[in-house]
Image (cartoon, rainbow, N blue to C red; front, side, top):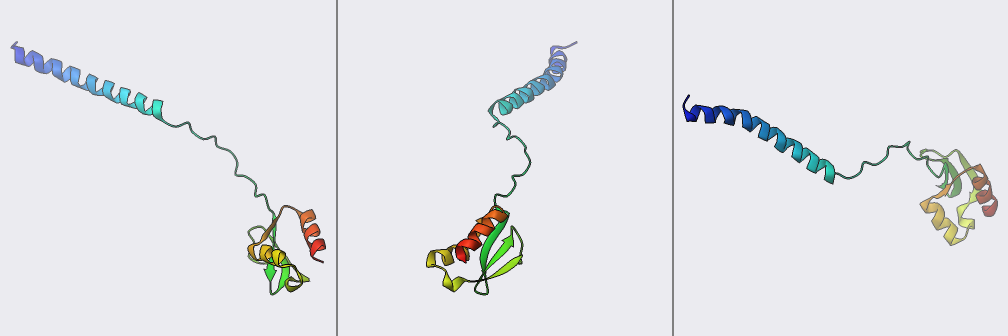
Length: 108
């Protein structure tokens, strides 16, 4: 068998092996430099279940994420200090019913 045919046969055997080794080393390099995956956990429960805002000049209480208030109080916003009015314009987050009671008591 001539030398050129033997060389071609060896090349046909060696080239796929070289390609496989290159691919494996590239994979190992990527894995070594990959960032640590973040742990998967349940979504965090929202801190605030309620919010106080202004509706038609009065203090209103909303459930978190609701479009409509669950209660509109008789407390006129105009009777409150400026800082409280500004806080209500931005929305005051309230974690529970007790916080709602304290807020309404402070504003009454």
